[in-house]
Each structure stands twice: as structure tokens, then as C-alpha cells.
Amino acid sequence: MKSAPNHIKFCPSCGDCSIEPQDDVSVLCSTCGFELFFSPATSAAALIEDASGKLLVIKRNKEPSKGAFGLPGGFADPNETLENTLIREVKEEVNLNLVSWSFLGGWPNKYPFKSVIYSVVDTYFTAKVESFDGMDSCQEELQSIHFVDPDKIDPKEWAFPSLQNAIQLYLSKRNRSE
Ligand SMILES: [Zn+2]
Image (cartoon, rainbow, N blue to C red; front, side, top):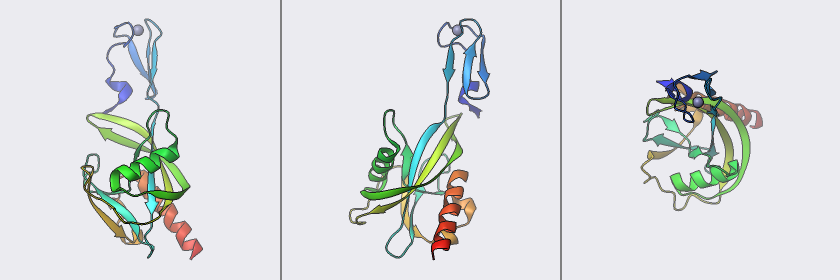
């Protein structure tokens, strides 16, 4: 698997093969000067607690990390605010309506998909729902929904290193406030 710039063999503008990846971020054509960037994609995911303090997690049904624990969330669309990404993805994935959210942190991640390794910045929000009525795990993207104590989950079972970081920060904040 290679990063996106390393898959480009011909200049998308002039068609010449004198195109080279630049630091895994862009490709530059030395014939016509065309440059194309592959900046990181942005995602947003929610840490939602139930009334007893257990965390809503999903089992992923898609590669990468199929079968691992994740959180409801997904990639930002063009022209979308990050808050809207969060609200939209939580609604799409588990059919819950967020009523409030607070930024926890953001970490870089690699997202391998169909032979391309994409760079991503994953952001995480602690969030609240009005109720869990209507919660739905029937989406193709997830196998199941669970409420867990994240303390009890082996860090290796989380889908991404960025998610391990988010859970670690979430737990350290929670333990400080107890
Ligand atoms: Zn060119």
C-alpha cells in the first residue's frame, strides 16, 4: 500500500510522466509545473455516555479495522463545519440526535482504503444526546452497538491509534473529575 501521491504516474494536466511526489503531500510535474495536493482528510467522532457513564461504541463492519471497536463518526464533506460532520455522522450511523458537544482533541491517523493510504486528522468530541430512543444499529457500516467501560477494553481492540489517544485523554479527564 502506498500514499496517494505515490500512485500518480502521469501528470493529470499535461499527461507527461515527469511527475514526482513531494513529501507525501503533493505531486509536482517538472514539465508543466502542475502541482496537486493530497492534504489530510478530516473526520469527527463522538464519545457519548449513557446515564450510568458507559460509553457508546460500535463494532466496525468495514475495512480498515473491520471488527474493531470504533465510535460513531465519519469524514467531513466539502464546505461542512466539523460540528455538522459530527451531528450528521452520528445521525447516519446510530440514528441519535446530539444536543451538545465539546471538543476533546484531534490526532493524525493513516486510513488504508483500496490500496491507498490516506492521511487523516481525526477529531473527537464528548457529546450528549437527549435520549437513546430510536437508536439503530442496522447500518451496513457497523456490526453492532455496545455500551462499555472503556477502562475494560484492551487498547489494541480500538480501531485506530488516534482513537486510543482519544480514549486515553477521555479516561484521564474522567478520573481527574471523579
Ligand atoms: Zn504536467
